[in-house]
Image (tube, rainbow, N blue to C red; front, side, top):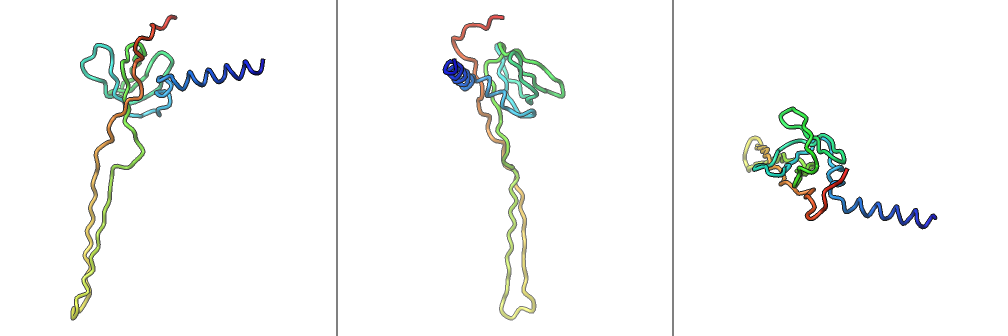
Length: 133
């Protein structure tokens, strides 16, 4: 009986690892998403709110919207974590011979890099039979 329980646990873990919807569940609230819906000409640019087994709940233009899972072709997310702001400071000292005082010149530069590209996290499985309720 114990071997059967271990086998079932391993099988469930393997199924979860192959479920692309589980990867979407790992995203944090507020993550930037690009959602491609069936038949839509343009993807939706939204923020992640929550995920259920049947719906992806997103925020677009300060409105919460639930998108049924069976209407989603693909979900891309924009990775976050690294700062896009880079600060650089340069100092130059001039100790010329015979000068009454040494001089120091300092310059600072702040640059903002581009956002990281979107990465696909979910793609509708092809050839999968429709889900029955």
